[in-house]
Length: 476
Image (cartoon, rainbow, N blue to C red):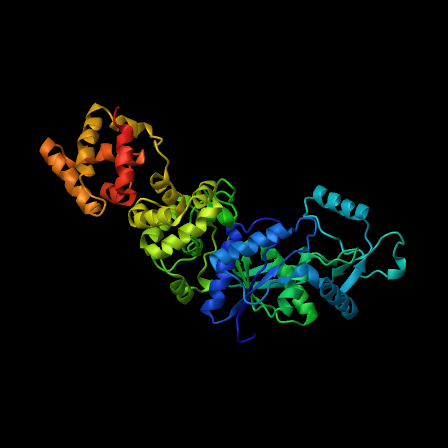
């Protein structure tokens, strides 16, 4: 085995980079970094009808956002079809493969017979040893691998353990179709060999493929890579992951306001863990991660846990880094794009100043954006029902009393401290608890009952906007 570990992530560009694919990429990336090796990227675009440039772009963009790009340029599988066919013909020349002229009608009859007899459908090997001179003129042949018919194929898997397959149930599968195009089974092996891949880390739905692919390696005299088949991700209810559970594209998680580092942290813990550590850096994950520590059983995706972890990351992220993440996130939602359109230097400075208070109440960047809405809202504010309820007769009386007190503070002296002193003085004189004065003020200034600290709100909005919003709520 080569000294340097080489892993690969090989998505099919028939759709977005889904969350299971992102975790597979992460485990490949982590193991390569942990061992001082390399992770390569291969785009398996041989399904020409379903592969799209848009999907390729989405996959590459998702990997970039997560920081999981492979080393070097991606390899595109379709461009290597001639090389795949070359290997199929080499196997043919070695006597390890053969041409098969079975017609579609014959294959269908085999399937029907197998189903009637309660057997899994499989090719019966009828052209394995027949003379090609018997070939029908009207059928274009495929090339099939000549699989061993006795004994066992053993897959020593780093995650699943020792898995044994009886060779008599693994049929002579197709390497090259009748139109000369390679099958997935052949292309994957040839590409992994030519790329120098030493460790194949992928979903355990490929475990049976490993047995078949092992036989291609052996037939070519190539070294078989280390297999590691990781469990699939299920929903919180234990059912197979679907869109309702979170089987969405990575771009959807970006639009939902998750930080990439939080998502990576969460994905790393789906099927792998390091003691009781819930929150850890990528550097820690690299130091701790070993593919042999991944669990055999399916992991469960839980949005509530992801959201909680993301909130922890937001609070732990310094304000400059969070502001960078926030502004990068804005173009990915409709409300964010609307804010970008009016985000001048003055407004940006106000939202940036409010960030310490906003992030304490937000679990996602979407919630951060929502929390910042009061800063750039146009007057008169649209009020939540609960906020309207606070502006009853008593609430309006508080506003009427506070307006002149706050007006007395000059622009130069306006701050969280000076406004707090004014509000506290009124509360003490009126015999009110501070909350009784602060709540109507919060309703008038934000249109809501929750916000960052009310005096931070006053400081962020500034003197002129604060007084105007209070005046909007006063009669006359």
